[in-house]
Image 1 (cartoon, rainbow over the protein chains, first blue to last red):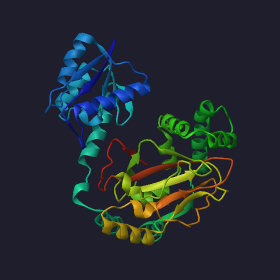
Image 2 (cartoon, one colour):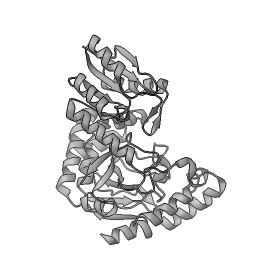
Image 3 (cartoon, one colour):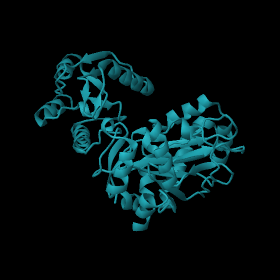
Image 4 (cartoon, rainbow over the protein chains, first blue to last red):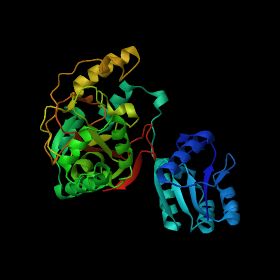
Amino acid sequence: MSVATVTTDINIGPFKIPSNGQNMIMNNYTQRKNIKVEFVIPEPMMSDQLATTQWCHKDYGFSKVILCSIHQLPKEEKYLNDLINNMSEVEFHFALEGISGAGKFFLLDCSKEAKIFLNAEKLDSSKTDWLELYDLFKSKNL
Amino acid sequence: MMNLQEQIINGKGYAILPIENLNNFNKLRDQFIEKMQSLTNEKRLEKMRLVIANMTKSQINELMISLLAFDQASEILIDSCKNIVKSLSGDKIFLQRRATTIFNIPGDNQRRQWPHYELMSGVSPFTFVLWAPFHDLDDKGGIFYIDLNNSYEMIKEEHKSGIVNGPIILNKDYNEKPAKLKYGEVIVFCPFVLHGNVNFKSDQARIACSARFQSIKKPLLQKNSDFFKFHQI
């Protein structure tokens, strides 16, 4: 049984993390959790299917897969179901959120939470300032 | 609870309140003590505070990192103050995944929370903070809070120079009296209230716990799923 870290496209939900940064995040996580990594899987850019990971799993039988975030899970239901069906016994770890688990319900919960965050309204901090944010606080809070 | 909203948004920007479910908060303190036993070789909080007061800055840092694994702490704290949270943010919230444990060490030249606004961290203007000590704050130390109007005046003054939460507030002398909290009380405050802690003399460290939350119906700023999780009260 093997442990793999997985890098994906630079765009990860609300985050933009280069693969070098993704590796740093996952390596720090595995060190803290005392997990020894044997495989580093690069998923292709502009894809969130985690298909390469599933192909490799057939050959190597991963026990644990480490990702940076729940936002790297497939968005489309079909691809999420493929992942669940093919890797239901694998323990998934999401380093930024600091959560881990295995099985259909865990992955569905993670996907649901990712969608809640994806659908949440966001303020663009590059297009505002402290005074405008203060005005929002006063006008939109009650 | 309308008064609380008024107090936080149009009043001082902070309020000191009794913790609603003290039994729940006692459980949080007891779990904290249990986790700290192996790290301090002490079983009682008062003794732990003595040990921590003599730790090096790097030891304190390691302690804080190890406590990040205590990932139920934020839920227990929030569930101890349900009505406070609901009145400010409703029952569906984004809740800080890992509560912050704060160790304040007595003496000069210690690591401390310098004056800051919570907004500097990238939480949204709709985020609120709950902060509760694990014991009475009975020395002259503690966190001071500058009321919202005066905090805003400083933000405006700093904003003219292009940097908020910069040298102007960091170099300022604060003669504010720290809030005197008893065990079983919590302070709730908005992200624009300037606060920090003063040097203090004691043979014991101060230990507190804090968690941030906002309504899921309000926009996020820079903090996302890395910092918050979805939580229904």
